[in-house]
Image 1 (tube, rainbow, N blue to C red):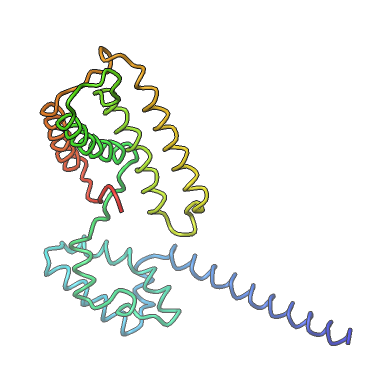
Image 2 (cartoon, rainbow, N blue to C red; image 1 turned 120 degrees about the vertical axis):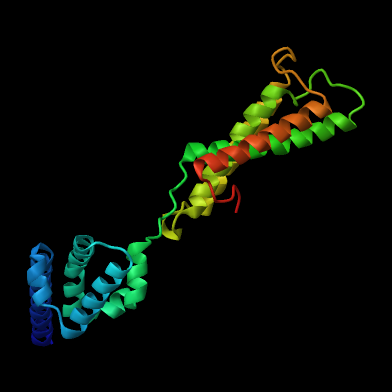
Amino acid sequence: MSEDLREKNKKAAEKQKVTSAKNEKQEETTSQIYNANADDLHKKLSNKNAEYIFKLNKRLMDDGFKEDEAKEVIDKMLPEVIDNQIKGIPANQLYGPVTQRAQEIAHPVKKPKATPFWASWIDTALLFFALFGLLYGVVALTSKKTDPNSQTGVITLILLSAMWGALLTWFNNQMKKPKAERPGWGITIGYLAVGLVLMFVFLGAMAFIPTTINPTLNAVGYFIAAAIAYGVRFGFRRMMGIKERSFF
């Protein structure tokens, strides 16, 4: 029994040694390919890949590339082509048809820039300002008397919008992360709950702020403020190139 176990361990060690040697050789070969001269790499192309490169070069020239520009682009591709050629992957499988690859080179698709947190915060805060402005306007329109301790002052509106903007922007950013990198739902709900509690505390505290510091507007004033905020948000989104929605 013990001899069988030793034999199995010996075979496993030998297999691991062979695998390690193969990996080292593969890494060495890859390093040599990516450090090789482009002219030398041309000579190593298979007939199929050589034909692909020839057609691609011709296509790029037809699309307006100068000879040295087309050569520079192709020379940069050669290490990847040769590396995959060794693995049995031809260029047409790696890049697709020549016409497709030429189109990708001539007209590369730019990846959209990630919107920084502060920009998303302002965008979302302006949206909340517009929404709360409409809500405050409706409240002012339907209220018969003005409450001296009203929490619907201008400062309340600004700060509340900023707080909701920060909280929802943080939440959206967490949801955009790969599933493995997202915080657990317990942590996420905990953060949201703390944020909501702080907002309610803030609203309660605003009742003690005098109207001279936190003045209220009439219904028309809030509607106008909401419209201005939404207009500013529209311009801000265009200026910053923000395409994504504020909410999922």
